[in-house]
Image 1 (cartoon, rainbow, N blue to C red):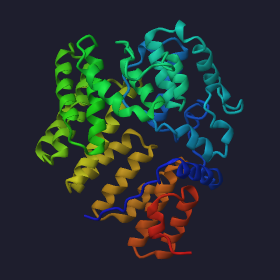
Image 2: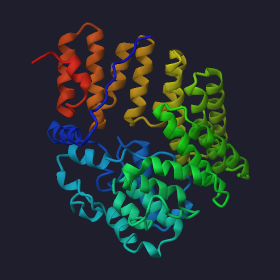
Image 3: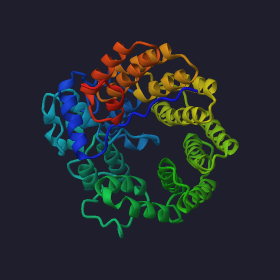
Image 4: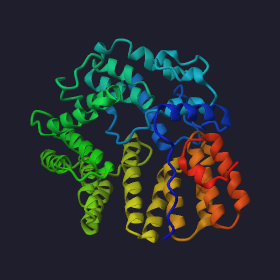
Length: 408
């Protein structure tokens, strides 16, 4: 099976600043206006972006209590990166109310007004608002809404209704204390005084954080066990319970995955998929948006797991589900292209990466790089170099570019 080269933007503040400068000049504007000013969704908006808009709308309409549980969040720097792609450094400020007037929608101003006095909001509204501000890249405003700006990460007493939201905000406000906060999340997952649904979420968080690092730790196993116990306490058979079950099985699949137990990994992912099927609501509802938000990482995880196991044909089938769920999400097409490469369909893989280009923004850089790589493999070196150079104009920081571009 053909293996793709690793493409990773360089880490660190200097590289990030260089990336922003490149984006400012690259003329690859992000098509979706949601994360910079809460503009209305457009054809190229991903399902994840639409959820951000939905969250804002429900909050300002006084309907936060009607929102189901969502699962994923955009990258923390998305607003800043998208603003850079528009050449708008004036939209990168840390303060929510500093958004330029020509970019701030009526919805943006309504959110600002609703959250002027956080103490007047219900706990559910404060939880929803903090999630929204994190989605939009404003951790300070999220901390203000939850009263966390002066919180001590070692001693802060979590509120049962907002414990998971509080941890999410503290992680963003205190990046140097993330190990401490992971320990506190593990402690909270064992706290019988917290609702079982919250404890499942906390346990999943610890499992996934360790799993993504590839670390088979005692904390991972302890969290997985606590998640199972909390799940057993959740009553009922409704959508929320099924989604909780789905997230638990998808998370604890990391246990066997890290020790290369293929059979048990797939068994747990299959149980997660069955729970997802049980949870599926009717379309054209906010519940269906939430279901899609859980389904996307399910099929993304399944696709990547199948690829890691060398089961390329099955991965290709799984990625077809992924791109149908969110046809304007660059992550879907990236995994789809990887599966196509694995089955030897380079030209189809190029077409998959090309689906990223109209979305604009930073993801264009990786798509251009891999299109160049595919042309290299297909014996088109001149075209390959052209795509590498275009990728370099969007993000010059990945080491892979230095390897594949011709020496100047």
